[in-house]
Image (cartoon, rainbow, N blue to C red):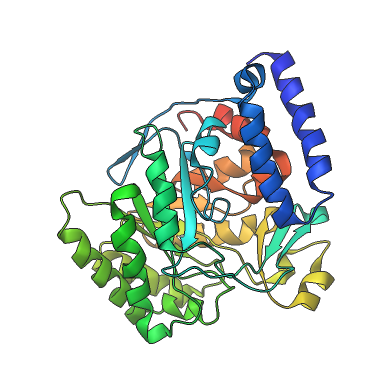
Length: 348
């Protein structure tokens, strides 16, 4: 890519972000994706912005186009899979999807913590429900699109029946995603993190894996964990990983430890609800990765949390992650972040 193209790309996003940050985050998100779709419909701009980086990574039986993916939460309803792949991502994780549509928590529920280059969200699994998400997924069934399905439970489902909610998403989505992620680590659904308990996890994975056995194609099932677990809880996760033959761990979700913030701590404690993502959680997520790797070198890991430049991406890879994901860093830095990461992490 030429210097002129890189410079134009940078200034386009800087201007774009300036305008978007004048709007509330959820409105800005929709405007941004509609704007990207419009821009990519213009041939000359499509040529500048479309970025295809191919360095295949074989992971859990899937051939990923490259090692950088979009984390769950950005494309909740599988509406932007094509756009995100065109911008350079090797894979896109949609969701979190629940069996029935749900509105999520009352607004405002998403906050920019600009001084920390972070987001604070208490979205609450707002999504259109599995039936509508499957309709959307059917539009993106192309070999070049690698799609993960992040699944959860409806907030009104008691924890004793949570395993059934995961199955209700798993079955209809099975033919339309390449892998699944069991999300039991969001802090924004009441008591959801209690599902990280060893016995509950076994119950969920037994049910999903029993259904998978009846399918012609066996698709990987990953587990996404919180960065706030104790060492004892992480030891239990490792035990479940092996006993249930979980395909990989995604480390990590957002944190509810507001001490990670440097500039917006007072605001976060005042709001009292919501997970922090972005630069401030890098060290916390990395500490979990380091512990897991130290305890068990055989674990298959995907790193997410605090990646906002090539160096922070390399830190995750050096801790044993084979794939990495971004979300908040992309909000603050745009497509330049994708190019920066992939240009440095090639063959790493």
